[in-house]
Amino acid sequence: MTATSGSASATAFVREAAETPATDASAARLPGRSRTSSRLGRIVVWVALGLCSCAFLYPLVWLISASFKPREEVFDNALIPHTFSPQNFVEVWQQLPLLSWVFTSLAIAVLAAGLAAVSSSVVAFGFAFFRFPGRGLLFGLVLGTMMLPTAVTMVPQYLIWHGLGLVGTWVPLFGANLFGSAFYIFLQRQFYLGLPRELFDAARIDGLGAWGLFRRIAMPLSIPSFVIVFLFEFQASWNNLQGALIYLNGGSPSSFTVPLGISYAMTAFSPTNGGHGDYQFVMVASLLVTLPMLILFAFGQRFFVEGVATQARKG
Amino acid sequence: MSLRMTLRRREALAGYAFISPWIIGFLVFTAGSMIYSLVVSFSRYDLLTGSISPAGAENYAELLQDPKVAQSLGNTLYYAVLAVPLEIIVALALALVLSRAGRAAGFFRTVFYLPKMTPAVATASVFLILLNGNSGAINRFLRLFGIEGPQWLVDPHWVVPSIVIMTLWGVSGTMVIFLAALNTVPRELHEAASVDGAGPVRRFFSITVPMISGAIFFNVVVLTIAAFQVFDQAYLLFWRDQTNASPSSSLFYAVYLFQQAFRQFDFGFASAMAWLLFAIVLVITLIQVKLSNRFVYYEAEARS
Image (tube, rainbow over all chains, first blue to last red; front, side, top):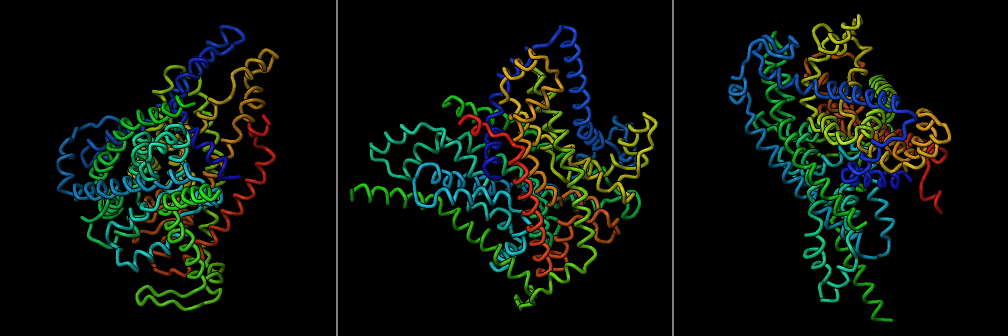
């Protein structure tokens, strides 16, 4: 029950991007009882949108501002720095091994996202296209694992990687992605189910085997859903603090990922740890790790819409 | 007949081959891990020697006696009770406003979504200062209205609400799901109701809420499960620095579990904690499912 309703909303989530503009137009033509009440309504909506935007943007604008402040002014909470200190952006590279953090995080995120996208699409194809005994039950299990708290498997998974001698390496941070991940399997299965069946039947008559159907037809057509999974997992990996704490915390700071590194910098430069810390560097580092995510989002939004538009056309 | 049998068997084999990565992963990383975790929770585990010896229910007995377990569970429950309804209300309100924004909806959706893209470490490092009781922006804003804000991150009573504020800043994921659900509500229903004289409030509660009850239910379940696992913000703001004493009201269940597992390396105790968490989350989810049968409207049922 839980899993089914979950799946419905998740598809809706993906479909949403393509559908929003169309329905917005009809929403604008609300049947107001009189012209004045609809104008009032519109004013309320715009004021609400403006206020909410301020609330959501303020911390980000403040972060940008704080990263330009000299050490003494970081805590003054002014939105515009009294003194501009762009040298923060130069000095941060000497103060923190930021470059190696970014490299480590980037490598792990690419591996994690690539593996998750490939393995999940293979598994999803199996669930979408072949009939076999136990399919419904197994797919129910896939959905069920989405609801499992990560804490339950945290310790035994650590013991697995410990047993393999891989604690302290990058492997535990992407290794499990080799086996597909529930939400992505679900997402890509939905996408495959939207592809026209005749395409596959024709190819099968032409003598294409199961792997050929996947490799030559399903994969090229499902690039949008592949990109969606890649972006989702890239973000999850880039932000993964707990995993890095478990598997990389024992090493030297230069071997940290970005989230672990900033967590380390927050302690090292903390104002409570010996007076006025160089917290401006924490701000610069925080800004620098947020920017790739914002760029990813700017770039990814198009793919959400595309992925969905393909699906909607099949409709 | 026999040809069809072999074809069918071939198809089944291909299907199993394609899903085999997931089956292996499930057996090792999910089912196997869960069983092993249950075994460890009834054992004494020594990481150095890798030796494991049966301990009966010792870890669970310790669990009940450890005041920090009860404390962290209480804090986490308090957080869930506060955060989940607020997240639902704020996300739904934002989605409603967005659904009326016309052509600008895309732009504002992007703006609202940016916090969701911000890594937890960056959020924590910013809110650490914004929530400062004396000079922080949030209390300065409250002062404009003559309200003297609390010492958010210092006063034990305000620690959990502080984390709730940070959670609410990233509420847009939930909002997006509501937005999608709102788009499925047929316009004609609203039009017919307003012809019959139903005002916007009445229409909201009699049409919108029942029509999107599936999405509300989904979000409540998912957010509740997430609330019991809150880790990043509590760890970053309070437990990152092991030399510092933090108020006990900031000890979340997932943080204490993490400390027991990966700071004390008491795997038996941590596994028992994990299973207690699993049991609690399972019971709460089942209750929610039971309740949902009464309140959730499924389109498919109505059609058939």
